Picture 1 (cartoon, rainbow, N blue to C red):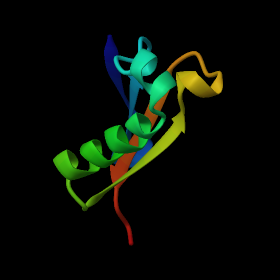
Picture 2: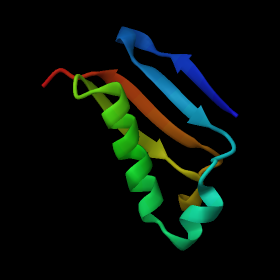
Picture 3: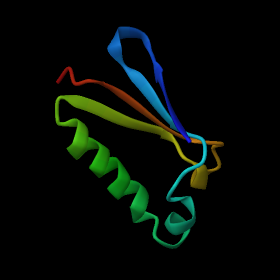
Picture 4: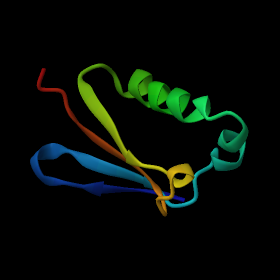
Length: 71
């Protein structure tokens, strides 16, 4: 299940403690790239999305930080 945690300055963290694509991504690592691209497309170019970690790299959850784009 995923959860959202509000951070300072209007950003938030989106945390997936049980990654829904983890098993499939073991066979096709590009799924993580496509997931990030999908989040960007859905949320729009006015936000910055940074993946702070994910399960296949040894983290205990997948974490995305979402903030207003300043660029």
